[in-house]
Length: 142
Image (tube, rainbow, N blue to C red):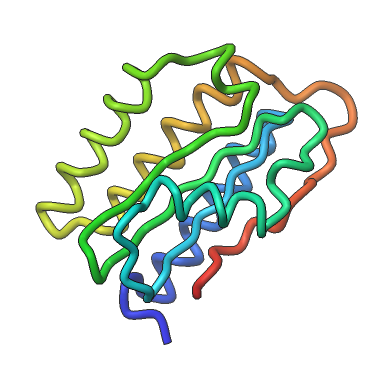
């Protein structure tokens, strides 16, 4: 059972994911885990592989991992992201999401992350012609 988001919030976030992916060839996933994870970045990369995110055509997938039990999260992007953004981008995004999370605004933190990643995705990899959905849009709970 998900206690991090309400059903209404979850549906709204899935709509946000669909909206940002419609404007870009990039793919975005959100994972919320009940596990206690001590190395969020390392675990995020394991999930990235397990979810097949490295198999996107343009290697431009992004993942938001939330670990409520440890009050942690990670945001990562596949290889093509390194050509578009630098470490300052990830730090700024993480800081903004952290402010929302510390204030107890879970939905707002994820919505902000999705929209920010989406704006970068649309600018770097705009949707052109056929734009297949390479990965599911639903939030993954584990």
